[in-house]
Length: 131
Image (cartoon, rainbow, N blue to C red; front, side, top):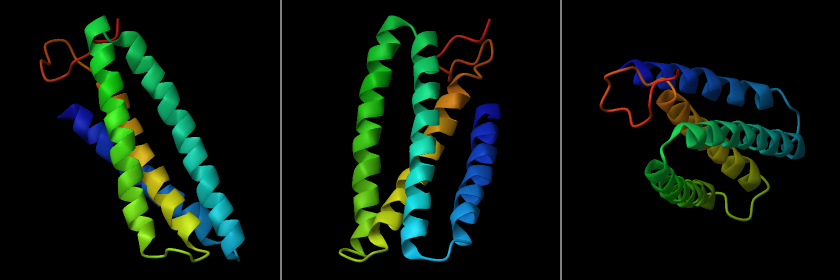
């Protein structure tokens, strides 16, 4: 439960921050560039958290985590392609897709970060507690 609250709070804060940063820009090119930069930053953070989780995980869990991450990437990309399909060919499409990618990546990072908060005796959490 504690992990879900932490992940939820992080998600709420990060999603509103993502939208606020680009909202004040004056043209589509700037907004699209901003959304792409936000996705890039979210992806970098996700990769750092993923590596930390991989280090903490036992060998069999690493294989499962890798498979889960690959499946999640495919789902994220397909979902964001669907979200962007309503603006196909428009100048706003890259921004819409990158906003989606940033939001979903931030969500995933929060989830993976919550796995690093396992408490002793929490059998629903696959990683050992921090030492």
